[in-house]
Image 1: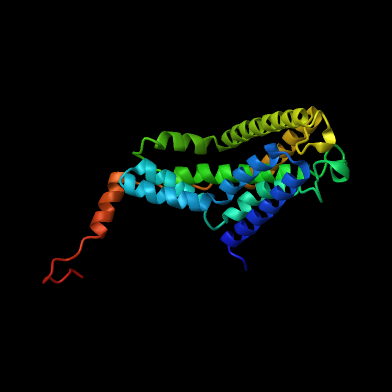
Image 2: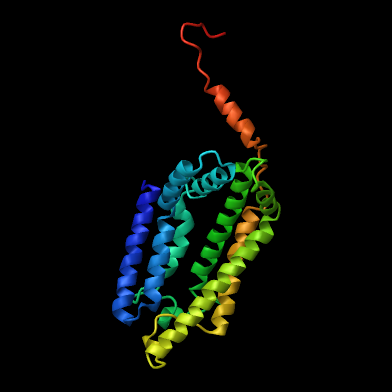
Length: 260
């Protein structure tokens, strides 16, 4: 059984192969370069999080807010559920733009199942993965944040309004992504003299509407499966946690017999 890191490495290699193929086929870096950089960072997030966690611990080991944030990040990027399962839809959405089996244009892009095309599959899968990640993140943050941390009111608010939070964040990400597609599409048209066959990034208003709908079908699935938030345990004050840790680590004085 491959480990989470091995799966992420395989996804990264597939990403590099696709990026190189698109670079050679289209001769435009406007699409392959940002997708390669963005997906590489996403795939390496567990290692980046671990490094930031170590740095934060050395920077301010007694900060309850900093510890809550780093522990939350480590939990949502850890195993289970495994970061590869979360990030795979994002990476594979670009892998299927390979010139030999591009689902976004050509004969594969022209296929329709009602209002949807093959590209609705990665959009829905990514919408689901992002929404499920948001639900896990706000739930973990509420559990990891001590009651006396300045972050506690915000963490509790996010957990109490988790559905609205996930809907809003996905809307912001969708807006950013679709505007990026629009900008890259126009830039590639300008560089190729308006030749649609020579560009990598396809965009039109109908495709945008379908992408948004597909993203929110994924959101609906994630919301249904995460409809019951876990009961957050009573997180003690950071001072109580520190005191308990100190008491628990107290050693008997040499030469004395510990009480039974």
